[in-house]
Length: 194
Ligand SMILES: [Fe+2]
Ligand SMILES: [Fe+2]
Image (cartoon, rainbow, N blue to C red; front, side):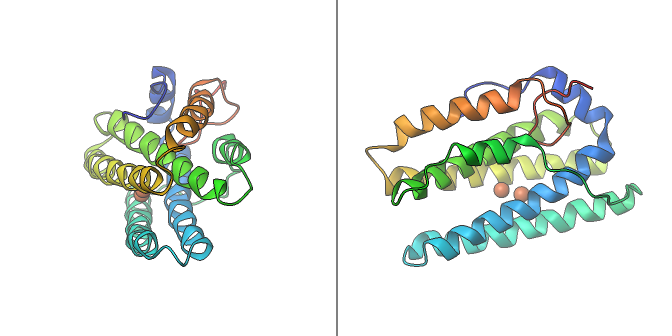
């Protein structure tokens, strides 16, 4: 993914493929959160009609992904348990500016980075998972790559002068969170320390 500042470490891929139940519980949560973040943007910027319409479609697609993961979990008899949220989304959110109109650009860029990281990791895992999940992850890699492009295009169009510098800053933080040792295994975590 062209905007990611660092690739996912191999140690994360190996751990994720070996700890499927934990990964899938978090993956299902990520799909819900992706729908919910798109909805939050729809509420925050109702006057931006092209964005609202694109994100309304995107939110529905994320909910379909959620249903697909839930189905795969049922087929694999993986129980749905509560998990503590990981550090990635929380810490990335802390890097976003709270002032208007800067926040809109930051939300679009953060969403682009999260989608790009998701696409990268679905592709890395697809070949290592049992067939039904492998096929699903290949399909999700394409879908999240499209979402990454969509968010990035809106960021470019809405802030043509600022997006590049801001992407460099947020991208560096994102890469740090995705590649440095982490206390938990999550879909967007760094390599887990235990
Ligand atoms: Fe998704
Ligand atoms: Fe997505």
